[in-house]
Amino acid sequence: QVQLVESGGGLVQPGGSLRLSCAASGNILRIAVMDWYRQAPGKERELVATMNSSSTNYADSVKGRFTVSRDNAKNTVYLQMNSLKPEDTAVYYCRFRGLGPWKFDYWGQGTQVTVSS
Image 1 (cartoon, rainbow, N blue to C red):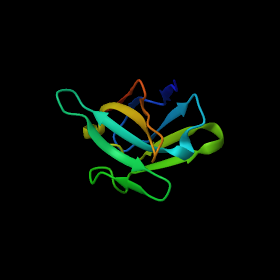
Image 2: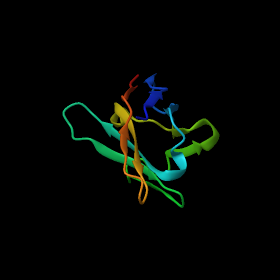
Image 3: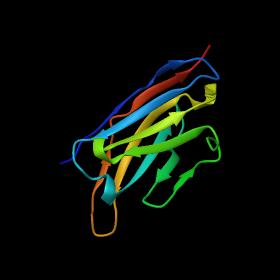
Image 4: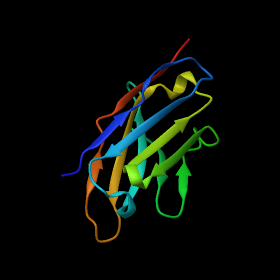
């Protein structure tokens, strides 16, 4: 069983930046699709970004402000968040889904991001 450990959340002022990390306990990045989700209080979980081997797609609400990157050697995916807004306040989750014949679906524990002055 692979575990995903998230870190990097916190309190930041509007316009600020944060970088979230999602580290996998196993070497699965090359066989996974990586997603970032968020869930604000009282709202449904929202897909923020998806990264596969060839492309990364972003929700319209974060396009141009958020960037997903990966470090295969560290089995880690990052979510760089710039120009943060109060409406970005949420618990952020990473998710790794297996590609092709690889059938797995792992979630991180979530990390709180609060954007407030």
